[in-house]
Image 1 (tube, rainbow, N blue to C red):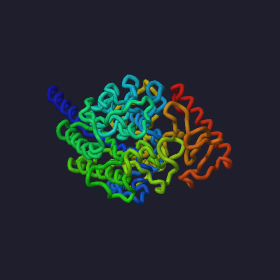
Image 2: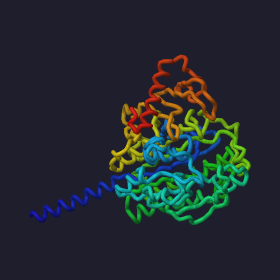
Image 3: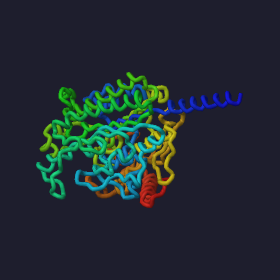
Image 4: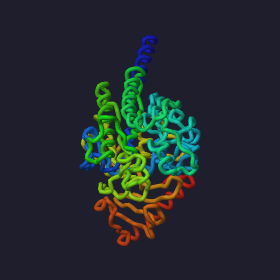
Length: 469
């Protein structure tokens, strides 16, 4: 009898373990590059059609006050992967945008990524597309918890044509052709024709990764699909040009949407839609000003139409105004995230670190400050759920704050900036002025003083590696 009981307990234990493994959701983060808040048709675009992303939104929840950590790629992606505001990265050194001549990157000994946490929980992990957290071997994705990597280590416009046409690199040394890297090995140097075909390659290989995880490894997976075509130059595979009403950039966004549809079909064929979390967001806002150098290098594939208007003010390269850091975000998990819903609570990309980890059963590191919070109550549509943040801060890469989002208010702090010097603080009521056009600081002096104090305290807390209030 004792032996029979032992056998039954053993079998029950196996069943419990199996159920726990099944319960761990697959996680896909589609990390768009430089896509504007209103560049999806489900977020208001009139000249770009995104039916697959629209369908994704219809199945889940749109987050309309979702903030990217920074207005440029490197610090934004570092925060996303670590759950830490960019000035905290690398033992409070921070990270500026990295270039082909950069000798540093995200330090494995100093930072823990979401891929590492999920891998410890039995996940297989993959990244396809753009990395931009260090191109040297010691900084590549496979050092940071990704089992598989196929992609480019920095943007597709960091090639030699930028040097030949302008000589803009400070050291005067021409950069090599863009490297295509598999794991840690350069397998090809890409010219512009190669770059145009990479988006299709990344989509195919991402789908193969999903298939291997489900059918061969039978493990939950974490996939970061980090597209490249929506970053200049806006090259897309042959046959997909000229489909959009928004010129080459619109073609790129529509191709990204096509890739989303392919990935979604893969999930459907494998029958794993109901156990897969899908998040779509962008690393920062779009280009909104003409850049003569990009036009000289890439022609129409680097041309930003100044007549094309956006809902939000300004675009990438800055954290002052929402156009640089407030991005479209869609989350879906069939049966778990309510379909056809919307949430306007202010949250940030750093929250994905903590939320993904806790949904997968991983422990949040307690040996460092983690700024990301668990936003599952918002994602799951729990009644009365509110943002877990007192405020969302527009941090500069290495410290200091450009802006603060507090409830429906947005304060832009005075100071010098390439977008223009502000002699005084500007306050905007985003409820009635999403485009940040009317400064109402004079009408709310106490609120301005309160927000300035909060911003100063947050900047000091990060500088001294302390928790934010």
